[in-house]
Image 1 (tube, rainbow, N blue to C red):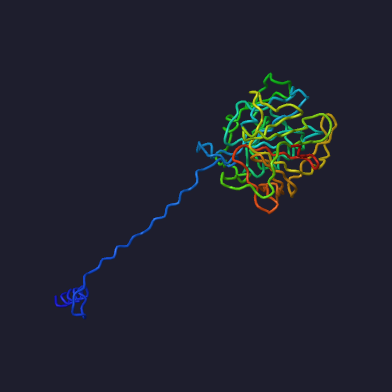
Image 2 (cartoon, rainbow, N blue to C red):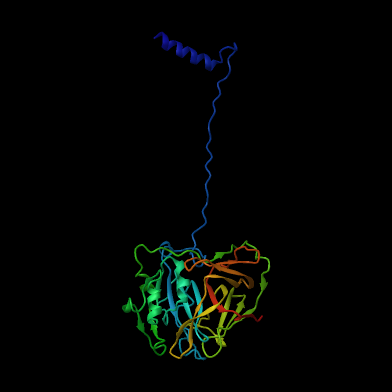
Length: 349
C-alpha cells in the first residue's frame, strides 16, 4: 500500500511541475495524421487510349482478323469490306506484287459480320506476337506457312480450327466472300486470356507536339508495281480530326459506305525479303522485315512527325521515337500502320 501511494504522489508531482515551487498548467498534445489520397487516372482501352466504358471488354484479349484487300480497280473483288472502321488497329502489308492484305486488331469494339477473311502470311507473326497470345482468325495458307503460323504464340480461331464460325456471303465471289463475327470469335477465348499491351503512347490534350512536327495535307504510298491494291492516299480531314483513306483512286469505304478514317496513320518503312514462294499467278511472296529499326512517319492531328521505329524481337512492342529520341505520342483513337516498302512513301500535300 505504501509503495502504491508513493507512485501516485510522484505522478502527481510530475503533473504539478515539482521542483519549481509553482504550478504549471497541464498541456495536452493532439497528434494529427495527414492522409494523402491519390486519384488514379480512369482506365483506357490499351489499343486506342480511349476511356474504357466496359470493364469486361477492357479485360478481353486481342483478336486479329486477316482481311482481304484485293482490288480490281472498281472495288469489286474484296472491297467493300466490313469491320475496318471498328478495328482498334489495322496493319497493311504487301503480299504479292502490289496486292496488300490487312490485319485488323479488335479489342475494344466488335463487328458482326467481319471480313472477307483471307489467308495468313509469315509477316503476321511479328505483327501479333507482342499481343499476349491473341486470337487469330484466318483462312488457310500454304502448308509451310500454315505450320509456322500454328507454332507461333496465338490462339487459333481460323477457318480450319473453327469452321462453324465462318460462312459465305453473296457480297463477293469466292474466295473473297468468307466472313465471321467478332463476338463469336471472342467467345472462343480461353479462361487464361489476357488483354494486350498498348502498342503506342498517346498524347494528352495538354502535351505539345514534338519539335519537327510539320503540317501535312496528304501522303501517297506505293506497294510495288502492277495491278493490285496499291496505290494508297491519306488526306487530312480537319473537321473529322482524322485521315481519309483512298485506295487505287477512289475513297476506301466499308459496306455501310463509311470512308476509312482513323485518327492516326503510322508509316513504318521496311525491307521486304523474298520468301522463296510464289502465289498462284507466279508472283514472289515477300515477308516484311519487322525486327530491327528504320524510318517511320507518324501522321496525327494534322501533322507529320518523322522518326525511327525499333523492334528488338518478334514478340517486342515496336517503339516510335522522334529525332530527339523521345516517344512519338498519338492521338487517342484508331490507328493504321502501313508497312510500306523502302521508297514507297511520299508527301503530296
